[in-house]
Image (cartoon, rainbow, N blue to C red; front, top):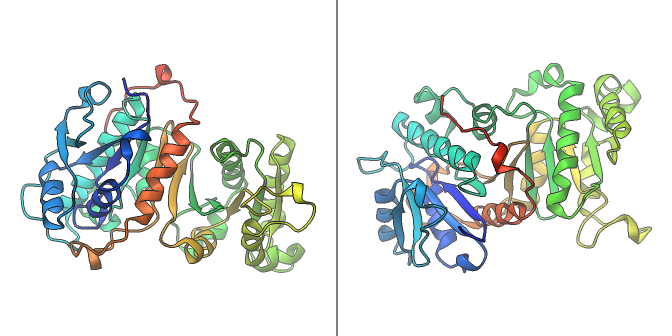
Length: 357
């Protein structure tokens, strides 16, 4: 059995840049001293891509049963699903590619749920492709939560020392106020608190954004802060969580990455005044993070029974197949999965056998 973390990496949408950033990320890294990667995808497609881009990387097919006991130190193991029979049309949104990308994820969930792999890193998928394939999910987060029967979960984005947890995800802007609830905010706060152990912050400092400009100005610019955000913060404080807010979102991210001036003991070296920021909606949290850390951002799903990370970018159909995709975000996603897997406390004996639906 491997004594280093085994990291499963799903190939993502075949028409996108997922496979490209995977093989680029694995070609130079001294992988076997830190972690063991296992790609979940299509061997023949990966092999053709390696040849097309002249990437110095060897891959080999293994079975699920061989993951823990027969890993190669010479080549990267691949769980071959054999989903792709024709030449890939890069940049094409296709039902077949959507179905293939879903099946890579489903296999990865099965392996992570059984404990065969220590963490799951997922390459980008295309939501329209999933829809064309009649896959009933809006994205990775919802798919992972449903297939693992996870009730309380959240999307977290990590870039540098900035960590942003979202209270809501992919919903229209006009619906945010009515979709936002005290329970959703409290769940995001609790999951941020629980994630502190992965970042050397067992009692993390959490800042909560307001929904409205200037955090509502005491109810004069919207009532959501008074009615649902502040009550959620108060409940979290009563449970012992170190949380503050709501703060105006146009200043809180600056404070989260800029060290406090006094006293020095209030901040950790290399970080700001807060370890996590809880944002109320998608763009509120992602605009500052992507502005600062566009190439190295990582998406993390909190609350799952295993660790899951992903590059914080899409399929990039416009540059797929051109050998110009930047692998930095994928590399950071793998690095973070390795780091987090060293702190995981899940009991494999209590895992339920995953079954695709």
